[in-house]
Image 1 (cartoon, rainbow, N blue to C red):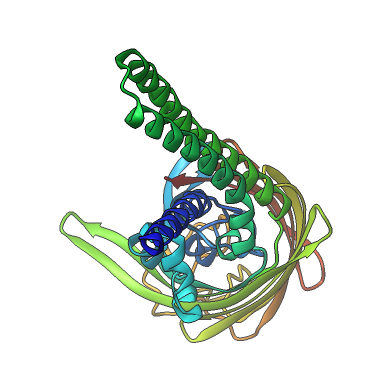
Image 2: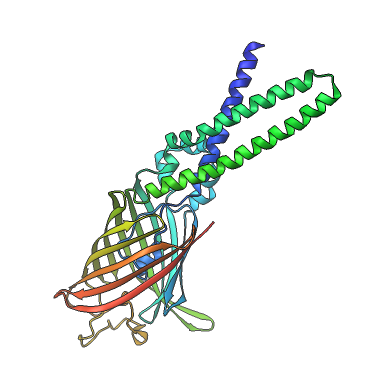
Length: 386
């Protein structure tokens, strides 16, 4: 009998610990440290920052491009399918038992986007995966146990009081005392409910504090994407053309309490030519708002050259609609030589709310002779759909 009682008590203690930790885990699962631009927008070149920050998105996200001070019809969607449909519903114990490979696969995000660039409609899709991340609360078992420990102690105390009151009521033969015990039990159960609610609020505060302290954690991402140009040629037809692919690697390293140093290398195959990009940025601030400056070097094999006699390749069917704006359009230009281009951009992120971010930048582009050729303001609104 004693053995069964000990087993029952141990099961109860395990149940309290598991529930408390899973409650913390649920709060952690819905936290996002950064909300960078969707990879599809980065592929099209319509995002403010050229040097992307790595991210591990755990929400469905929508990006809108701001053009002429209005929201343009250009938008991008991003989500993590495996995380959303599988791990988002798992408990901490189930998640902790998963292999490292499966956890990595859960960070794969799919992004779709469309934008009108240089007068031509563009569409893109991209896949991105996180390769490394430091100080991730979802894998920090020590943090979860630390946050849940006070809750477990409070719940244990209230359960002992409830058990004692139940025992008193059971052994009492006085109707008035039983009625009093019932009222006290009701009050204790309400107190237990409030402990759960207060603990959740406390979890959110501690997790928010943890995120604020680690908003600039070190991470590494890899991504691949493909771009198409298209034209709504008629009411019942759509003219689509494959334009090229890109693959890139971007990472960041924590630089002090308020700094973040990011780097990115990117290779793009545009028709029969290629463009290469290397960039570095320094970001300073906090989770709520930060500002950055970035420098980008590009070696271009496919680019718009207004001084060239035959600007477009003869196979380029969208040449007649070309009207340069951002200068990042994926068209088939008729270039015989490569050229270099430099970009220095200044910008920042500002969280308008927990789920809405304003992302902006001012790009200054220079030729290989360091002659200023373009001054481009770019801004997007990013919204997490929770």
